[in-house]
Each structure stands twice: as structure tokens, then as C-alpha cells.
Image 1 (cartoon, rainbow over the protein chains, first blue to last red):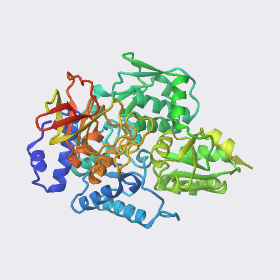
Image 2 (cartoon, rainbow over the protein chains, first blue to last red):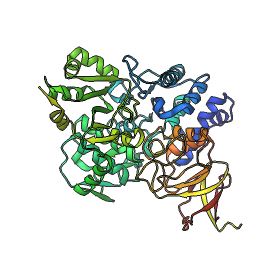
Image 3 (cartoon, rainbow over the protein chains, first blue to last red):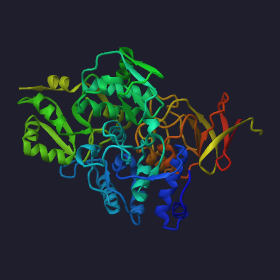
Image 4 (cartoon, rainbow over the protein chains, first blue to last red):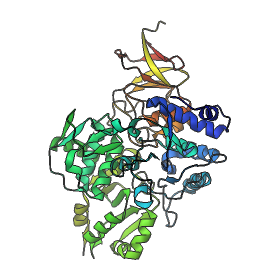
Length: 385
Length: 139
């Protein structure tokens, strides 16, 4: 990768060690993705905010790094471990470390968004512009739905972009890579958001390429299904974009058998003691859908709904939050179903969810069994008048 | 002992490393499939399930899933349980590259024309990511 004189100097430490570290990261990912050069980016979305995921090593690194580092482009950040406006029984160590991480990001200049759906909350740059999005669902959504250009960034590569305002010109920032060369042929009816999540999870596992086509079947799906598909695709694989453009270069079939193999892997119990909705965090569209399904019914099990704080505030005004809370749901902001310490093995034997992404992390990271059901089935099975 | 096999790779993060080879054809999600305190691969569906990354030369296709995997690699290194060196066989993903860059773990991407030999267990790898070579010997 060719660096300009200024970039070489920054790499060599002429602008300080934090900027040099950022360029070292950009250089490694530039080499990894065969980039010719660095280009400016206009927005950064960072993952690596939840103490449950980055641990003490990450907290210490960020705390030290934030002493000097400052962001030079608008930067939003992912959810953290819990909702600071609500009581919880997490340890004071956890909370102290979480606060330390949040403060480090704030000091560097991020917006306190604590959300994995920046695309529903902020006026992002227009289609065609380059950004740097970590958080796999947000990167896939940015590329596939909003026409932004980002690679499937890591927490650290996006951090380096926030410090420098640059990213390598490579992979999904290049037009030809955004043309799908492999297609998943959908050989079964897809109805619910869960069906699309399973399709996404299967596709991530099956595809090495950066962009995959699902054909025209996905061109008119709603936001719930789209987010479910994007999040699952980002969870199981390295693919950072999907497209409805057809391609006949290479095809893989997704039918009943393929669906069954994913359900067998992720559906690890037949019931659970808590319902968890929101991974990615729910937006207004999904909260409306949920409240319409619930009506005046009540949950027969504990229910946690994870959504972005501005979405919650809006739903309070519209009366939707009241419907959900009257039904017995606990609405949690600033956190997310996946990797939240609020859903621990110590507290729960099984979690009921419609999120394939959540199912992956609950099973594999939290060590909690998962009962996968679509939203309509969850409401019909676990609510009553 | 003579090193019997030598593989060439593209240099992503320089340095040298030595360790027992852990080889897999399955991608790894560093956030959800590895215990960050012990370096043990915990994903029951992974062919390296139960094996430890500590002091190994990890040879794997690429990492998948969470963008936070980069911090996971850094945390493994901070806890002293990371691989000594890593080789990506299919493509170097951004998560592995940035994690190795910050953790100072030598990283090579296997050149396309290289054929991985049958790796007998246990084998040792000697990695020179400054010149771009991995040598393998049976131990």
C-alpha cells in the first residue's frame, strides 16, 4: 500500500504514538485487503464498548489510549453491557469497568449512542459515500440497504479510522467487489423474520466472498426481516454485503435440509424462562409490530426488550412503550440481547428469542440454551388475556 | 532437527514465532469460540474444540463473525494465552489483521500457490514473518 509523505511520517510517530498505532493498524488491514492507498471516510461506527466482550485488557487499552487520542470524524458507538437508568445486580467491578470504557470513548469524542443500529438513529452520509463500520450487522446494513461503502471492519480498524479519518481503499469500497459473484438460491418459502435470520446464518457459513446475492426474493422484505438477515449473515461469516442483483457465476442452494442444519445447531432447548427480543436492537417499526401483536395481552414469562434509547423515548410519547410495559415487558436501552451479562447462565436456563444472532452468542458465549421461535409464535405461545 | 517443509506467505504483521502447529480448515469466531482467560477453543461444533491456542502457530482459513474479535486477540495476548504466530490460509480478514497488529502477533497470509502438506501431530512451526516463511517439522 502506498502511503503519502504525511502518512509515512504519522506511521513513524512524528504526530505521537497514538496516531502511529492507528496507522500501524491501517497498514496491516491495508496489506490484508490488498489496498493501493488510504482514502477519507466520513463516519465511523465503533464496536468494542461492552465490558463483557472486551474485558480488562480492552478497558485498560482504551483508558490509556484515550489520554491522547481524539476522533476526527463523527463517531457513534455500540451498546454497552446494561441500561444505566435501570437497576441490575451486576458486580461493582463490572459497572466500574463499563463506566471506564464509556468515559474513554466519550473523551476521544464519540457520541454516546450505545446502539448497534446507527442507521435508524442518525442522518448518516448519503449513498455512495465511504464510512468505516465495525459491528457486523451495521456494516452489512450500511452496504446492502443504505448504499454506503464500508468493509466489514473490526473494532480496532474502525477505531484507527476514527483517529485518522481514513481507511484502506479495498474490498467493498471498490465497485467491482460490490457486484455479487455468488448467489444463494432460495428453494423454500420464507415467511418470518426468523426464516430470514436462518438464511443469513447459513449464507455466512457458506460464502467466502465479500458480497452475496439472494436474488429478487429479498427486494421487498420489511425492516425486521432485513435486520435479521443482515445480523445473522454478519455473525456466521466474513461476508459484508448482500444484494438482490442476480448472478449466475456460482450458486448454492438453501432449502429445508439446510434450514434444518442451522436450527439443529442453534435451537438448543424446547422452552426457556425468559423472552429476549432485540439483537440488533429494535427500532420503531419492530416495536410497533410487537405492540400490535400484543394488544392488551400479558406475557406469561419474563420478557426483556432491547431497543435504542431514542427509539424508547419516541415509543413513550406514542404510547407504544406503555402497551409493552403493561404486558409485563422490561424495556432495556443502551444494551443488546447478544452478549449482555443480564442474560447469564447463573440466572437463566433457557432464553426464548427470534434472533439468530442472539442465539449464536447466547449459546456460544453466555453458555445459555436457546429456544428459537418467530415473533408471532412467541406472542401466541407466551401471552394471554 | 531438520525442518521438512517450508511454506511462503505474504507478510501482514512482521516478527518471528515458534510453536506447536494448530491446523484447521474451519474459520474461527475469536469472540464467541475461544475462552479469553485460558485460550481454549470452547465451540463444541469446531474441529479444534478443547485445544489451546497458547504458544501455538495457528493455521486457519480466516476469522468470522464479531468485529470485537480484534479485541479478543489482544485480550488473549494480554492474558498470555494467545498463539505465538498466525497464518491465514484463504484470506486475511480485517479482524485478525488488526488484532495481530495491536497485539504484536506475527501474521502471514499463505501465498496462493502454496500447498499445505499433511501435518502430523504434533508438529512444530518456526515462523519468520519478516521474510515471509513458515517451516514445519515433526516433533
